[in-house]
Amino acid sequence: MEEDGDAFQNVVRLGFVSFFTDVSSEMVFSVLPVFILGLPGGSPAALGLVEGLAEALSYMLRAVSGVVSDKFRRRKLFILIGYSVSNVVKPLFATASSVADALVIRVADRVGKGIRTAPRDALISDSVSAGRRGEAFGLHRALDQTGAILGPLAATAAMVLLGWTVREVFWLSLLPGSVALVIILFGVREIVGGGEGEFRFLEGLRDVVRGRFLRLLGIVCLFSLGAYNFSFILLNAREMGVGDALIPVVYAVVNVTHTLVAIPAGRLADRIGRERVLALGYVAFLVSTLLLPAMPRAVASAYVVAAVFGVYMGVVETVQRALIPGYVESRLRGTAYGAYYLVVGASFFVANTVVGSLWESRGIWASSLYSVALAGAATLGMLAFTRRGS
Image 1 (tube, rainbow, N blue to C red):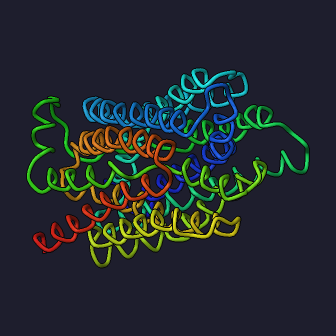
Image 2 (cartoon, rainbow, N blue to C red):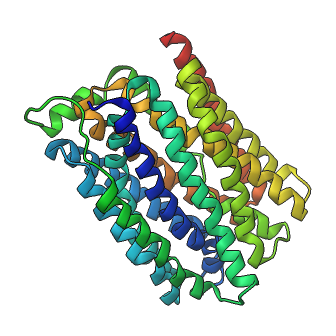
């Protein structure tokens, strides 16, 4: 591997790729749940189905792209293709006239994310030493989420100050996305750790999915079966009385706390153990989910719930990814990330579909209790896993 200081610049450049991509993406996603609810056939159950299908496909494709990037010993090409697909299709939400249209575009966007994510995470882990992986993923997450703060604020500014429509905001998202592609082309370098040698898929998968890594995936699966995404935080804000033009501000609050805890969570994980810090992230999710139905139905409560949910995202999305390299050898990291994302994606589909259906048919208490039960069980499982490994 190259000198850590030089190679770490790759992490910074990839962070800025994610920064500009998230400015683009979150301009769209901060208003997308409300946009979908306003389309013919829009409902909480439809929203859950759209998010669940799109994200599940994305996670499944991450398994494929991770394995293929291991086989060909190339990461950058898959990163470029994935970001290109997403940045081209997101503005097409402006043309959607039904939930089915939105589903097709959302799926296409997530296909791009599925192609790029596992190779990108493998490239990040190959760009630093083992002792700095938590810091590296924390820095990447912080830059990513800084863009995710600015994106919703840009969407609100365009609608409130300039009088733009949601569909015009969708078209605007093309600009920052294009900047990300330029950085990939001219700034990101190919770095692939590990030795050469023939790669065989079944042998590689067998070498990865076993022992403690298999047990870790089981706990992550259990948690992910109840871990709904941010769309339901925005739906909750709308039900609490937040106006449609200010929904992106609620999303910005999620991303502010997400950003603030990402680097500290990564550094803490490097010091005291990533499994322990991940358990803390599960607890943060549990608390935010309990607050959903328990807080007074007022505008201020929506921002409190969003802030706590952001803490959970900042810890879990940083630390879970930093955990993976410690369980596999370098040449199989893409495959390991692929297996991880496959498990999370299948679980994510279940989580969003069940939560959306329960929310619509039984109410917010029922959907919250479902997620709390799974998060509580996963937290206990992670604590037991950590004790056995110490």
